[in-house]
Length: 189
Image: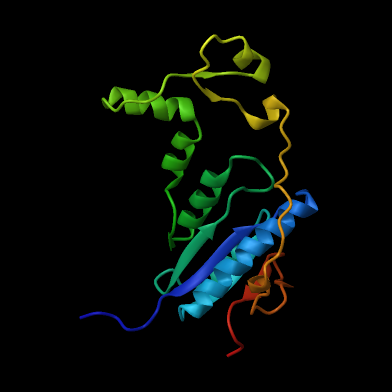
C-alpha cells in the first residue's frame, strides 16, 4: 500500500549575520527557490533559518516531520555542517544529507583521496599547497587543493542577477521566541 499523503517537511537553513550582503542575497534566492519548489510539489512545509539555536525543533514530533537540512554552519563557524546534523539527530529527526561522521570525514579532500586509493580506485596526482606561489614552482602541476583563504581568493559569491521567478510565495520571515526566523511556504492555509 502506498501513502498518498505528502510528508511534513521542516526546511532548516542557516544565516550568519556576519555574511556579506551579497552572500545573504544569494542564499536567500536559493532558499526561496527551495521553498517554492516544496510548495509546488504539495508538501506541507515549515521553514526556519537559524544561527546558533534550533531548539524550536522541540515543538515538532519527529515521527511526523522530516527535516530538509540546509544548515551549512553552526554559530558562524566554518565547516561545521557536521555539528548541525548532530544537533538535528539529538532531536530524533530523520533528515536529508549525510550523517555527522561522514561530513567530518569528507571535509578533508586529502583524506578522501587516500581512502579512494586504498580501495583501489584511481585518483589524479595531487598536492596540497598553502599558497598559489607553491603551485607555480611545480614543473607539471598536479590537481591542486588550495584553501581559498590561503590563496587570497575572495570568499563572497559573485554578483547574480535576479530572475522574474525569484519572487517567493512565502510570508515574511518572523522571529520566534527563540530567535529563529520562520517562513511559511506556499499559499496561506
